[in-house]
Image (cartoon, rainbow, N blue to C red; front, side):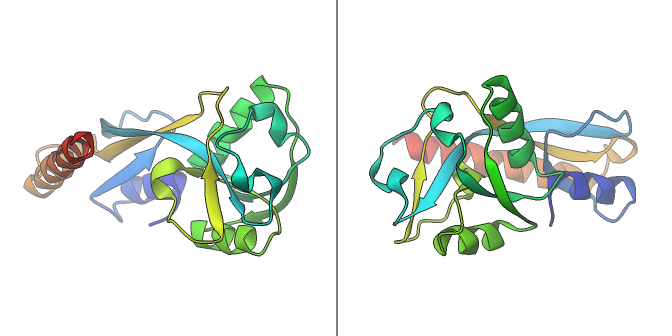
Length: 174
């Protein structure tokens, strides 16, 4: 558990066999298999003016008070790139090291948050708002040490994870 950078470090340190990590720097010691791709969205509490909106533009994030993840978070990195590319400046009021902490801060009205769409847990006082004019995504990979590619444990985990992912995708189409 932890952000992608921490999971990557745990793989290298042999503290984990396999991880689901997002975009981290390539390392020849680590093999990855593409796993999923997700849009980054804004979420707000029920008193925020965006709450009744179906979507917003990235420019509307200008000067918004934002609660964001710590450095090393893939969601934060993806949003920071998009904000720079679109010349949008936000007002970061707090960095928090967990999704749950951000949800609580946003719920209390301290600011808005950013999250990968699949990570958002429905809540009566919080709402996800897509950004309609910016393609902000995070990509996730199954990762393991190259030297352990023959491990039956790692192969079984990856096979099961991919089968479950494909089953979920198929169920969503129905």
